[in-house]
Image (cartoon, rainbow, N blue to C red):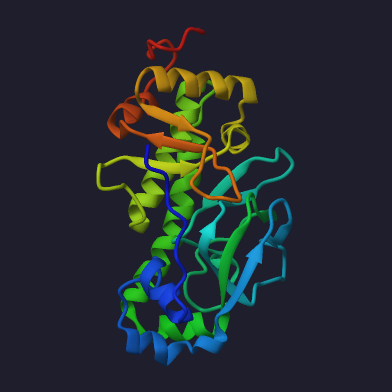
Length: 267
């Protein structure tokens, strides 16, 4: 199985953005340079299980948009059920719903903890730069708006997590497929999807216990919907890789109701 390779980081900070991030990719380089100087890009390493910020805190806003360069995922956890309600992988952004700027303030939510589930490399872009970019480029405004839309649609998929375990796990995988396809990060050339997705995250997002998640993943593997590979090509970090090899078959599980999945033995 081909695993996601570690991303190479260009020496020019602006190249990080224009080559690998959804919001900036393909924009006119002169436009990006006019809005953002290399000195404004702050590179930072986020370590696992350490809070980054609390989203939607009343009267509080962020000073930076976070761009994920490598590692992760970065998760948002709700309280008090400790449910994972968003995941951000390389190529994506987070923090946009907490920037105090005039565009994109579509919604507010209850306070939620944002943290790196695994070590993550990010670039922090000042809020003034994002405002300038949005004031200058219609294409950037369209992409920025889509980031908001994808957050809402991700949570919409999670709303469809029933108590039926195969459908609950399939709902999370479908949410990730929709998100990463919309961001242009996946699928691979063979039409399949690859996620570093630990069982703990799946359990928190789908409200299932770890043992049940393991059984569902085993069943999906036997049905040749996914493959599981806990190895990694990264020398310092392992990965919990879920390789979706049959997205269309997974869609059928996502739309199934109780007693409709032949490989799930529990009724």
